[in-house]
Image (cartoon, rainbow, N blue to C red):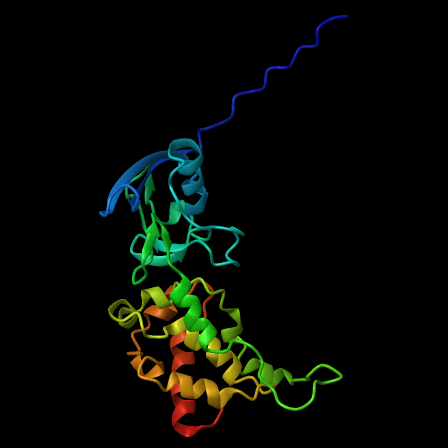
Length: 257
């Protein structure tokens, strides 16, 4: 019996690849107390996302590079990081949009670092516990009184529209970690927590609005906002974060919501 032979596969076409530098702020507390910058030169399709570049580095260059990611489709919010000076989701940013590619070379490095205002645990991973504690403090669940209903709580499209925007939050922390007030005082609840409070305060089915407003009337609450709009600019879901914060302030003053 003749020995089967494998057909030689044609070489992959790499003509569309470009050379791009990824400049990453590294930190490993087990090695040093100081952070440092490290450059990686990649050959990559410019239509790929920054997350793809990070994967290439981790799988082919340096397996110690550490970052969070999950769905890779802008839904889970895991891969929020600071990219070229702005908080973004690495899975939504195309390399060609930030590397300024000319003649097959990225003329600008892709600069990546952990989000500001949070304790860096390693490389691009920050401690999210305080962020999620602020979220839990807002009681992000429906609060009602009386007996358990025997059918769904109905709501008109108009009532649902009142808080539709703030239901889009994916808890990526991009807004909170872009806030200068939060940078200076980590005790501030932050935009994301207030957005999630808004989602229930203005829900016609909920009865816990007064409780949440009292929590946000604290010194570390909604009045710390300086209306800088960084949070709105940083939100990868396009939520009008600053508008939501102002509506919560107005509800505190008028007690109408």
